[in-house]
Every structure is written in structure tokens, then in C-alpha cells.
Image 1 (cartoon, one colour):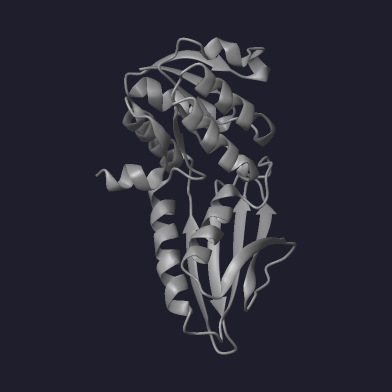
Image 2: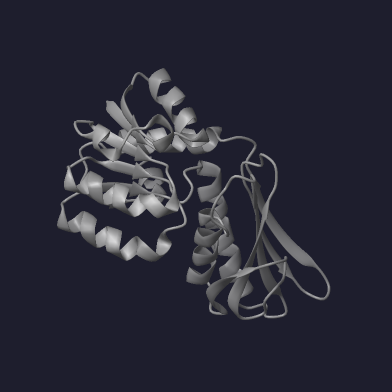
Length: 240
């Protein structure tokens, strides 16, 4: 495939390496640090978008306007999600979006959903979420943590919202607190903790590198070829 990259930060550079290693061609790169605008992606078979929250929505719409399938992993713009889904459908576009492309994280989300359902019957436990990322990450809480909270809410009769928290705290009902830390070069650590007066249950996913994320991104790009609509990691994982 002729693949264009939108965004050329740490993730973009790692994605470039794996795309080339798998026989794909980097058609163009749109990034302010290279003095290249979004228009350079015209003619690409597919775009991979890892930019900034402030530009993600306009970048995606540009892809739909020019019939370029796009894989997006930029987080921090979830309030515009419905708008993007509607625009993609209107333009008969192709979008693969996930807040995290790691297979391990997606398994972690599923396990957390199962645990949340079990804990509906155990109201003596309060819940808190915590995430740690590198000090250059712009959004907090992370998109992965927000998705984690949404997965838990979807399986819970006790919690119906999430809220940012300045420190690791626990809630017995309604809003799940999410605390965030930005430390050094940490790729990403996410923790779910149910705590009672007698004990606690902890689930943690810790990434050792960006490798798992990058592999998922390139797999998604290859899988998206020839498809129309909005897709996510569950579609890819269920496809086998």
C-alpha cells in the first residue's frame, strides 16, 4: 500500500519503520515539523493519523472528503466522536479508530468489563482508575483510560459516568474517578482497583514499549482495505 502519515511524532516514526518492514510504501508525511500540510496525502491508498487532539477532527474530515481510508489513534477529541461518525457515513468513508491498538490492552478492557459485572453484587467495594504516561502526552486522562471507564460503565449497574481526579481516589457509586500521572518515558500503565475495608482487587496493564500499539495500527491498516464504514479493534479481533 501507499500509506500517508498524518503526524510524525514518536508513534509516527515507529509506524513508518514497521510499514516499510512489511513492504508498504510511505507515500507522504503531513506534519508541521516537516513544513508539510495535510494536502500532501492526496493520492495515498490509506492514511494513518497520529497527530494532536486539536487537529484530529479536521484531518479525519479531510480524509473523508478525499476518499482516503484512515486509521486514527489520536485521543483527546472524544466529544466530537458522534460528529465524525456521521460525517464518515455522509461521505461513504472508511475509518478505523481506537484509543489503543494493543491486543493486550483490548484483552484488559474485556477482563475489566467482566470484573465490573461481577462487582455489581458486591457494593462494599469502591472503584478507582489510575493511568501513567510519558511526560509529553498532551491529554489527561488518557484515551485508553476513558475507554476503560466506558467499558466498565457498560457492564455496571453502579457506575454511570467518569470524572478526572487529582489523586488516586475511590468511588462507591455513580462517577468513576480517573487519576493521571505524567512521568519520564512511560509508554502506558493502566490500573483498575476495587477496594473494601478488608481487601482490594487490582487489574493492571503495563506496556513495556510502543511495539504492541504499532503492530496493531499496521494490522488495522491492512485489514481496512476495501471496507466502508466505522470500525474498531473489536472488529479486527473478531475477524480472527
